[in-house]
Length: 171
Image 1 (tube, helix red, strand yellow):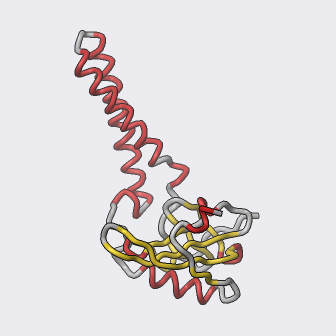
Image 2 (cartoon, rainbow, N blue to C red):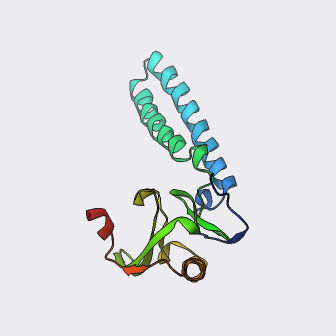
Image 3 (tube, rainbow, N blue to C red):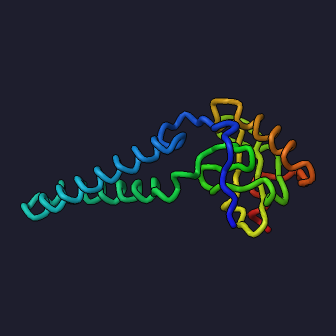
């Protein structure tokens, strides 16, 4: 039986409208879908009427908007940066109950803007790619600090291990 998310404690605000809410992801999906349909229609029209250059440009537009449709897939609309009372979810990982967390890795990494802190959460029966990774500089609000506090409160027996960035990927 899969545990359902409880009450929301805090939403992570990244400043990217189409990643911060279901509404934003829905808008991104339908905008990309509309761009895909229009570009396919016009590329066919131009290619059939001798407009090889225009049709080719619109074919590339169709490819990129098709990738955007895939990126804003409705199956991932529940994968938002949210801390719940009984678990956590992230943009690229589905809801993870606190009871399934086995280890929390933390450390500092280099970014183009300087050094930033990160947390990599590991869980039972789940690949690390499907587990939340929280980077301090990704959020405009205090999401990282609250995540650290909530994880320490809700998972007191889970070991915190200092790690290098992407160290877990090398193993």
